[in-house]
Image 1 (cartoon, rainbow, N blue to C red):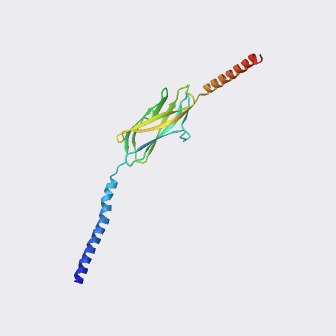
Image 2: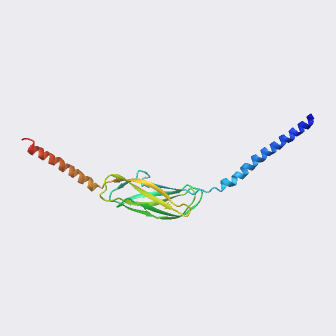
Image 3: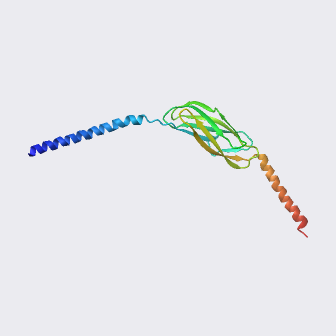
Length: 179
């Protein structure tokens, strides 16, 4: 009886080990094709100035050269990329080129962007929204704040206005202050 119990126990242990080894080999083998089939399409947009800064300052009323970095961070090729922009009211923004034929996985393409804020702008930040569309991706939107530096002319106008106001107060004080 003891030898029958030992042989049944040995057979059961052997089957468990075979099942365990089978699962250890089978599960990774089945998981590999599923991982290899995962396709990721992702696109990033970054606006920078000529000194590779991302603070994005523009002079009012002048052409300001910026660069838009378009990076494919996915695992697939992205084709027929069309770039567009939603400028603030009164601003002129040009993208050259506005279309990219294809962008390989991990690749970067730099596009020239010319931003011209309105001439009478004061120091303020405005939102500029860039959009990328392609065959593989519906819409990728990235918004950036561009800070406007007022034109030199308007700075002098404000200084002159301040001097006139101070001179006016001095004249009023001199005339009516002694009475």
